Figure 1: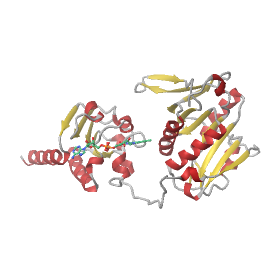
Figure 2: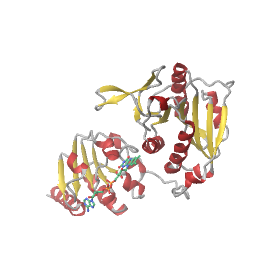
Figure 3: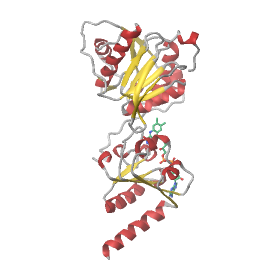
Figure 4: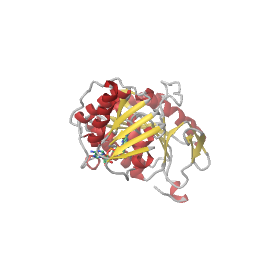
Length: 340
Ligand SMILES: Cc1cc2nc3c(=O)[nH]c(=O)nc-3n(C[C@H](O)[C@H](O)[C@H](O)COP(=O)(O)OP(=O)(O)OC[C@H]3O[C@@H](n4cnc5c(N)ncnc54)[C@H](O)[C@@H]3O)c2cc1C
């Protein structure tokens, strides 16, 4: 939230959001603690980490050995499967209670779904995918460096008027410290209170899906479908088209979330980043989270019934019309050329 100089003083310490999978702390959590410790040494403050999950076992002790002074544990069966809305609510409450000056998260799929949601909720500035972090010891201002303008420059960003200051770091960018098994720290147990879970989706079961081995980041031609595809049959049409032009099939998150196609096909902020020669967007409106993953493709072709969408505006070639008429007629045309 926006704060004045007096209110800023109420925000203290550096937090990291740790990630757990199958009871194991993911290495990126230790990498975050490594950089947090470096910053905390300069600011003369503590490093806290938050762990949300179920069956957390010795996670807290392990995080302390890697540099956490305090570990906030929220252990709840409802947190066994990743539920971004629920985790966001819990973190929102904890942030209001403890007021961290800085929050660092991982730029993993999970982090990319959770951390921007939290930043939006608490009205904090967020710099994603930082490659370097430094701190002004006097003011506590976090100097967040990341590539900008397609990687042509490195920008150092400060969040002067907002607290907490939030940043994400990709796995393997920071170095994990050597663990010290003699380190001691405090474990603070917090609960999922009823208000956290009120009106929030519940994960009933997690279905393991056998995913295809598509490698979108290597594809030179991508035919991507969105919500307009309407179901798996729509994506079969795109497969038929892609096969004829030597392309791979991509998808928007709306299509993936609907279960019409597997997650490896998702393009965007929480999916793959692609740089194909040709990207054909079929019934994808082009929300920023999708554009982030494909806007550097060389030639963008969009098919949409609505020519005012961001994707149609961005496209080099914008085709206004019903994709269920256009794509079959292109397939027919290609087949006729092959026969001729
Ligand atoms: C934290 C976060 C992360 C996200 N990450 C991603 C991500 O990685 N990737 C991603 O894609 N999204 C992501 N999203 C979701 C994103 O905001 C959009 O909701 C999503 O991209 C919309 O998908 P869409 O364009 O397929 O659907 P819509 O926005 O519903 O667009 C469907 C389009 O199809 C057109 N259409 C309908 N019928 C036809 C037809 N017959 N022929 C032609 N056109 C037709 C419509 O005019 C419309 O433009 C994320 C959101 C959040 C909050």
